[in-house]
Image (cartoon, rainbow, N blue to C red; front, top):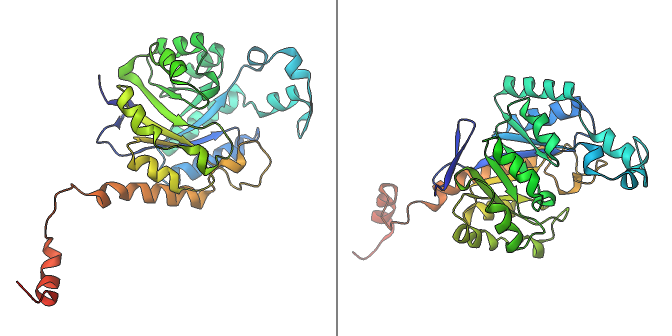
Length: 289
């Protein structure tokens, strides 16, 4: 099996530059303009793609769930909130056009099969299985049938559940992402040593979907073998919204990408040598030959 796949025109996996995904998710708070500003931030700092979340509300949630009381800017029920956070077809048309203008790919986590069809109208570069949907066999089969790469997060999942999903998809067209589904992660829940275990267990590229407050764990994830990093982004982590506190603000995103891009050079080739730049220092400081 291949340890590299192609997303759009970009190779992702072994011996490839880290593939950065800025998850906008629902941090746009239902605003197209806010979504476009977040896309611009991701593009400015060199992300390869941005990701949204797409749900067919009446398919994903029961009537009882939608009728539950929940105060928000959109109304007094859970349904008001969920519908208020969904972007429209016209919104996504503008997002598609805007991303093409900026030269950045976009896709979304579809939470139901109808949402996969919705996203396919825009010929998205890949499909994402959220941790919440890893056990939705019908949804995973639908994504596989598109022929697009399938990215799967593994938060709150056992190896048995991951194996079941992994055995459905095309192994040569899949990335598994280590993930812990708490928002934000506490350090003792991140468990990055799972990444080398996933690399040994599954014959596909392994990425990292992080929800920590800072940037250091994402760099460590790449050191441990993650080929792709997905992080939520926001303007301000104190903004209203369930994912804001687990997101990176613009300067955090910039620093994370900067640091990860240095890892390959810092690690070097593992061959012990005397560098040409060391020779004048050696001649000056070493007293005994």
